[in-house]
Length: 219
Ligand SMILES: O=C[C@H](O)[C@H](O)[C@H](O)COP(=O)(O)O
Image 1 (spheres, rainbow, N blue to C red):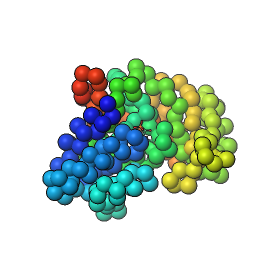
Image 2 (spheres, rainbow, N blue to C red):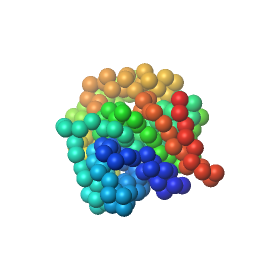
Image 3 (cartoon, rainbow, N blue to C red):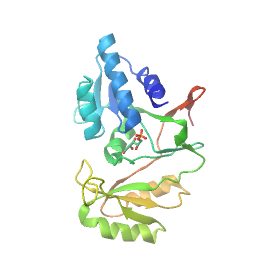
């Protein structure tokens, strides 16, 4: 399913485009497919990665990289942990990459999300990943509790201690009711010490792999 939707997304890329390269397992397949198209069709396409992972994959699959220092993004293709059916709001950051993803995805002329149908939900309920400066984790957790959330520090699997992001920060996963995603996205970011949270409310299009084929969701 992930491969099907990744292939479909790769078809959206045109010669000369600057492409935001998302993170996670679905985006990884897209990066591989894009690499194949560049090679087979001799396309001139540049990538802007959203994580260390997507940078390494782009290098592996022969996608030349540029940066936001010099280029705007024509289209960004990225995965998601959850997609709310009606609104197309997302939760991202299950892999801890949501800060750079949001910078690249929100600044793209078009932001396209690729998921399999298991990610489509009636209401967002996935714990919200919040990237936090290490010095601020305790006070941020306190504020998140005051807002009605249940925050926990994301711990590393093969190291004793917290997950450290590509940017040198910690991740707090907060479970809370999401009634107004647009307000909550800003409210969490207003807490001093928060770098970025994983609620995404500006999405152009979602491509969904279903058993019957690819479905496109638009607002
Ligand atoms: O930090 C990770 C990213 O937000 C991913 O886009 C998200 O976790 C989805 O990943 P996957 O395609 O592996 O489910």
